Length: 363
Image 1 (cartoon, one colour):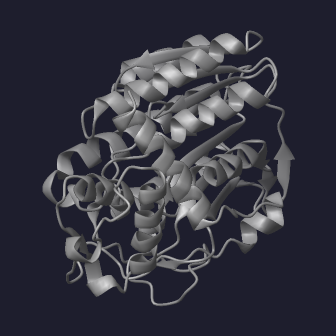
Image 2 (cartoon, rainbow, N blue to C red; image 1 turned 30 degrees about the vertical axis):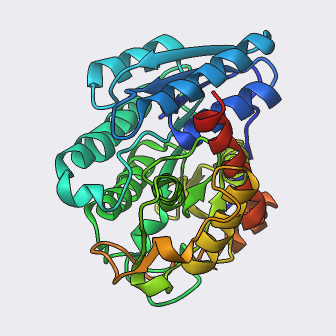
């Protein structure tokens, strides 16, 4: 699909989920690299996981914003499901680009706490779409809506690597169903209101100051306490682990190229809509992953050199809602944006281990 190039300089950008893992790193990248950008961050800073990490990320953004005085940073603490709040922000700031990263994440949590997924991922995203729609007939229409989808939408897809051309109608968790719903909702709004939108299916994002509910972080916490870690599917799971800096670079490139508005043969607008995978295109066996993690935790002095890893691991069956492999076909991302995630697993885990030691053991 042809793209319309957008300059982010001198633009006002909304990043929802700005205290989150990907959102905070995106905000910092924009402040560091885009001249005269104004970034407004929205986040509820809920207690789904340790709020101290979210506050740490916001502190890092605040510190960086003071170093880049030609840019502007404003943080709003609020819930995406609050329609009045969202509409008010759009009316006040007239955002050129909207990046919706706010969502209730986690496959397993969606099994026990479904309500929060409907509130954040469905109602919250609907509020964003409606706010974008309200701006399209004004002098300051939204030029591009970029939103987070997930590799979870592929469900039990047997064909690998996963391609955005694959049919994804078989989600195995409510979380996955809400993310597929986001793609469908965005397509409808792109068709009806000519809103350029791009969905990004992220594949197992990891790195420093990441989400404690992710396996690598949870493994680290348990190993440090001398507890046993459970490795699902008897160690035969494979994941396309993607380092957070690669994700952020991909998002930033996508932001600058909106799907072009076109007219179809019927005289009606074709939806300016696209979906891409962002993954490492190199799935790693979970057992190999935890072995490298252990080695890097020892190297960073998080664990002692003589740590008995074998005594603290247990191979267990697959959990409900999980899939045995995630594997991204990133050919479309490479073709359209000349970009492919490339950070080696050991390098990414080394940076995580060093951050973990600094954040939890050296403060």
